[in-house]
Length: 342
Image (cartoon, rainbow, N blue to C red):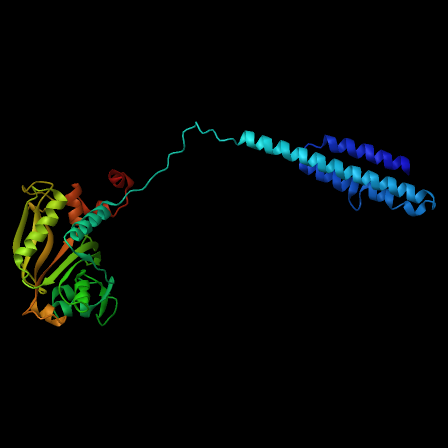
């Protein structure tokens, strides 16, 4: 049995030194020291030895086990060290190699104009107000002096969400003005940007979903001159000091007097083309002095206060700002178009 143990020691140590990887080393541990391993098989025969031989063979077996365990540990550390060295060598980072380019996004042209308008109005002392996109007809129509039977209240013009026509996708951001006026007494100076929805046919200048930025000023002594001055500042800050504007009379139920504001067509410069539909001008916004009924309905005395309101189509401002000839380009997500603004 002593000869068998010595043979196991020599064989195991030789195999351990030749182990090429941690997996092979673990297999050797099981082969020699496992419950069914070579050394365990020999130790199971100790009971057949005499009382004098048993302690000697047991001590030898323990020394051999300890030697094998030490050899396994030493070889394991060596293999791990070699593996780490190889990994560091193979995965070394060469800092002189150019990095992989990272594609950066950019603001959408509509967002650029949105931010510019907000900055311009904040510079004039306005505050930004927001409201819900799903609106009550009371705020979008009734409180804005839009009577029953008005065309904008028809199913063909408005996206109603209830059969009683009391809830719908808002047609404008004007309800935000009402919500502000019923909670805040003058002086009031706000802009309310956001998405609005109307059943318009899609073409070069129209979309059923678009963006508005409406403004409201209410205070003592506000006149039409204040309105024109504010809008001229906005348009000339956006497009340059040579921007040509046109104010023409119009009618809105919630303002009196009212006007439409146009800018000269950026495509044909007033000659007439498909973008401006031969007019030479592009309608940008509607505006006017806040109707006394709207002020009174919000608890503001129209005898003491006056105000003006306006609604700017952000898509049309963006088209003018970047010489975009077709509004649909801004919603088609064509990266060839969007990359121009990065």
